Length: 220
Image 1: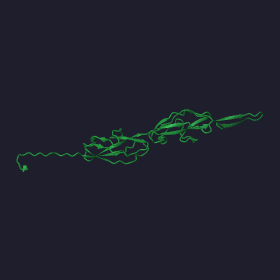
Image 2: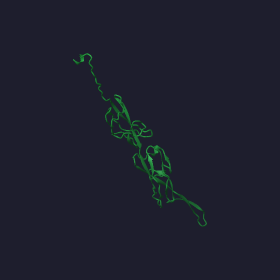
Image 3: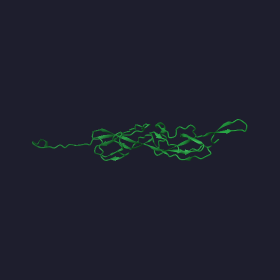
Image 4: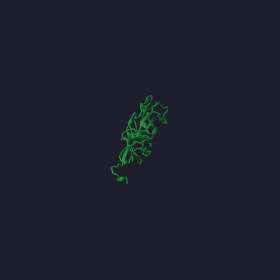
């Protein structure tokens, strides 16, 4: 046979097989998120030097929007949801594991302010109060009241128009625990002006009698 010939040369050729590896997906909860990331994600089986289709995100985080995947925990989004990547070659290791991290953006919403005229007020509320843009899971400073009601004093803001002891003061800065009014991105929430009727005195002076004071509330 050819193998028995003296002084012959025989060439063996290396055969190469691309390494398989796995991409896993980390929830990557933001440090200031007050809720836990919900849901689970399966991994993606990959082959070196081949294209990879990333999984569609199934994680959810209340008050936050998923914006993509990053190679590092504190990075910006490098890859979009379900993106097809051209030979990303995340790791050359045989049966290696590579982690992509979810990137989240805190939702923003608008706080509107209602003048909330009391039913027994004889005047209309005038003026205006500009809305406030707020970010979920971040402190927020409420607007300074710009409404005016003759005979009444503004005493604060509340989530209910029927409140008598408002939850929030004028221009108050709210902590996260008090500030997450809505988790909807681009949503809105209304706070109501709370009013207290002014009091004043009527002094009666009967002809030849004794003076007597009467305390009267505005609107009475």
